[in-house]
Image (cartoon, rainbow, N blue to C red; front, side, top):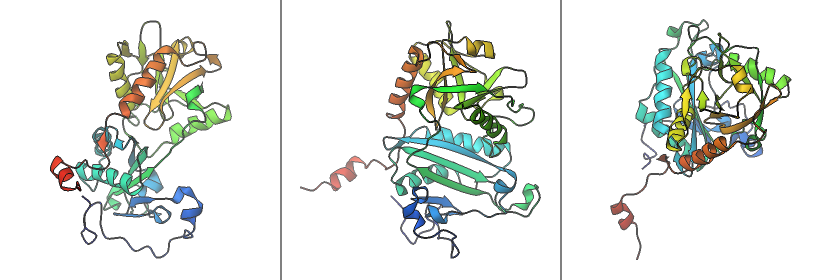
Length: 336
């Protein structure tokens, strides 16, 4: 049940005054980007009015963390696991999220309800918050939580038919420089690799680690299929992806041998199959890497099985967006 309109809570706080919105009121109807509501600065506001301070250290220095979550069939898939990871990222950079774990979960669900999400994508952002110039985090008295819920998100042009990948000249950050397990707002390393892929007319870039082993794609984990097993790199130099760990579990249930082990570009170029995975992208086949066709250039049998199993799983599990009424409530609401 939602809080009454005159109550204050993490999902229904007093609306902040915003008399100087720079958006034309008609923008919300003219541009779908501004449909719906966003949780920002402690309240749900129209998307066109969702703003942060120019002194926010997330904007000034990339000081913050984020998380992406998917909703399917009226449920949020692995909600608590994603929020666990958000809090882990925040802990790693000593950023205190101004809400409890349970409150953030409820904010995600409420964002879906307010934006009429049955199937969609939810982005959470936690910044260090507004403060004076200079990187010292002590200048920011309170972190800023932002929750955005959208009905669609497009990462690649035609993912179902497979994507073309090139190896980037930019190496993934070494874990002794910045742990890839932190979903930091500083994505410049990945963005430079994606620009390189764009320049080479590819859909995605594959990044190597400092030792020359395969790490991950710019926003997704990477898998290959060999004659012996399904392989993915260890997480020392790539994100501990929720989709990645889900697929490793699915492989076991499907009787597919899966290993987390380092491998090189030679292993990629000569693989039978390859695919990338992530919450936003889901599971996407890779049909070529560095102009070398992977397998026969189509979706391989192992990839196809995993894609099907993943689609079935995400649409069958998750936290309901709208609470299911108890048997007593259902009977009480039944009219005869």
